[in-house]
Length: 252
Image (cartoon, rainbow, N blue to C red; front, side, top):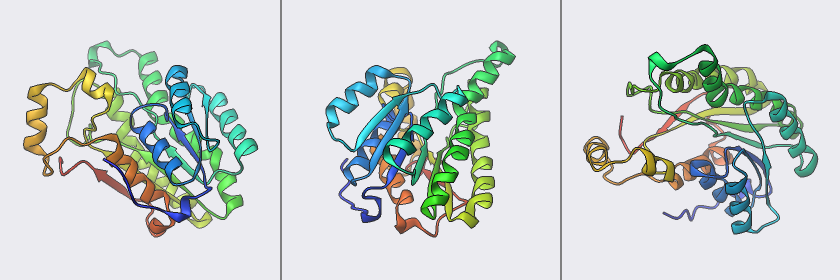
């Protein structure tokens, strides 16, 4: 699915995408580049990052290898973006990992690691970009949520706990940062057919169930989310903040 919409307000904007080397993050990176934005993505998958950089082959895209669970490393990476590309206009808090796990298997250490992987970095990335956005007279923070906890999905309680908290984080940040003209919203994807999802969890049975539940009778792809993120990051969405937007084809 292609996106032919053009958002002039995104041209030359400095955009930071976490987890931008694959999956939904990769589609967001590609979409922002097409709009003429200057994109830096953070990821720990060096092979995927290098592949994407080589494929796109433009001066407007760059990456940094970063373990977002290491908050000092994250903060240093954000500072490096500001030094090399200029003050950040848009932050897309995309990175997450929906590993399955049972309640019985969880240790205190595993819980902390899952929260660090799926929630903690969103708060500290937002904290790190605020000063840049203040300098620019405003900015946009987009936090990626999940429908998993909304449908009561089992088998990954640490993940659903983290993802449900993102909506609370979004609303609190939107209230605190609104006076600085910084908009904060949460985008909640449905079941998006990334390569990881298709390789690990999509079966004929689950696809049949999905098509029965979704109002729109097609599988959703990462570009569906990227297209919505473009709008939310643009000036056309300047009145939108403190909200959660579900992009799931009418699954819920």
